[in-house]
Amino acid sequence: MNRAETISAFLGRFGYAGAPLVPLAQDASFRRYWRVGGAVLMDAPPPEDVRPFLRIAEHLAGIGLSVPKILAVDADAGLLLEEDLGDALFSAIVTPETEEELFGAAVDALVAMQRAAPPSGLVPWDAGQMAIFAMGTFFDWWWPAAFGGPAPEAARADVGQALAAMLAPVAAGPACFVHRDWFAGNLLWLPDRTGVRRVGIIDFQLASLGHPAYDLVSLLQDCRRDNDAGREERMLGRYLAARPEYDPVAFRAAYDACAAQRHLRVACQWVRLDRRDGKPQYLVHGPRTWGLLDSALRRSAAAPLAAALDRWVPQHLRGNPNP
Image (cartoon, rainbow, N blue to C red; front, side, top):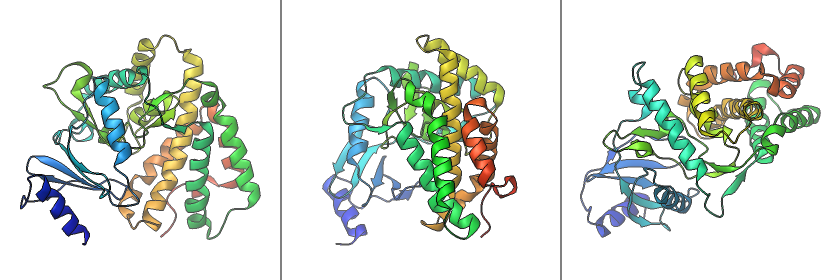
């Protein structure tokens, strides 16, 4: 049975036989989405796995946050039907007049998500894993594309040591539930609901256990859209006012370290999506992401990584490699 036949059989088992499939915007993974009969179909063929999504959906719903209700699932086939939360993605509807309300609600929902005890079995997104992932996209994908060959071992060692030093505030800080992609493209506005439930949450299957600053960076230094420095500072203030147990200086150091790590990893991830997965459309985000990295490297917390990159990558090469 081919994939189309598998999907058709799945839909038929749950009362959606013959319903038209209307494609929705896809993400950077191998998952695909359609609207079908008032629901959303997620097609997650191997190597994707819907089980983490199901576990996290249950957890987030259980702590009072808005996630799509699961209507039907065949985990072995990588198929599920979920509630359609609509099209009002923050990234699509935010305006200068609404950004304070939307981003404030996203910060409040993030605080609620982090305050709840995390579910068991979350994989770590700690300083060690953050360094490994950044090293992977930088040296395995960006470096060969930019320089035409593998990096010297000395460069790998130098950047690895710099990442470890930079991420020391992350290693020393608290740990909580981390969404891993808490940005405007994964949040939906649900104004008919109240409180933190006004924020619909999707694409949470990579949820891990990590530093609370990481998701805040994802939201306030979004590599897919232009960001406002004034709003960033206001939202940082809102977050810290809600978390008086955190030392602001230590939290800001971890926040700045997370920003530099994330922007290095993601800037190079766009290259991987192009070269490995045949998705060159993501390279459009490269200039903004490298710009965010440049800004992050000016913060004192990122000094070890800034110095290492200065030793190995000239400023004029920090961008999308030539085709």
